[in-house]
Image (tube, rainbow, N blue to C red):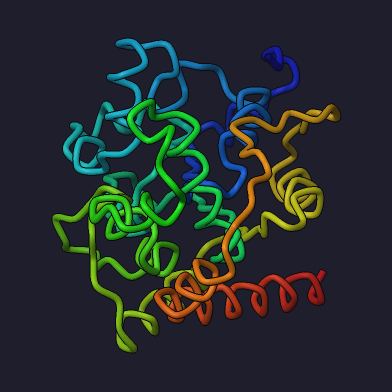
Length: 255
């Protein structure tokens, strides 16, 4: 943990940050870097408060964060979670938090979700990846055009968990693009070193030098038929990811 002598000056303590953590984009590993730059009591949700189950609920339910009194929200400097972009617009601070996120190629991200379910849920240990893909609560909440959904949910929506189903069409895709363009720092899971370097440059944060990857899925044979299904079902997310790549390239060229 970074000591107080290495932290930002008091004049900058009021700035708040929000990591929009899209599932299976290396965000769990990124949290290890963030813990080097914030005290635990500055982070929402508090890593050690209420046990793992309570922490996971808070991490996913943006409505609980939005519902906190303004003085409680003001006590935090870093918010993070599986929450839609809309949550960042609903906080009560004097100015919106500085936002950052990481995106991943949709087919690879989906396969990682499926492998994680198989690895971590005993009831799915013998299920095929196709079987897991067909489970509605996972497909609708964590797979179907998931990254675009996170940025398309309207600001006034009650769907404030990143795992709430939300249908995405052409209009919603345009909303997602407009919102992503407002994010202060965008990273791609395929080039995490560049993203970490940008966080260091923009915010003066210290990033760990060692490999801190966590929650990594093991290699597994994947039928080509499943890959084709993922591509067809997530055509909107593929278009959204291509837009994200363009934004990252544009921002890099401006440095």
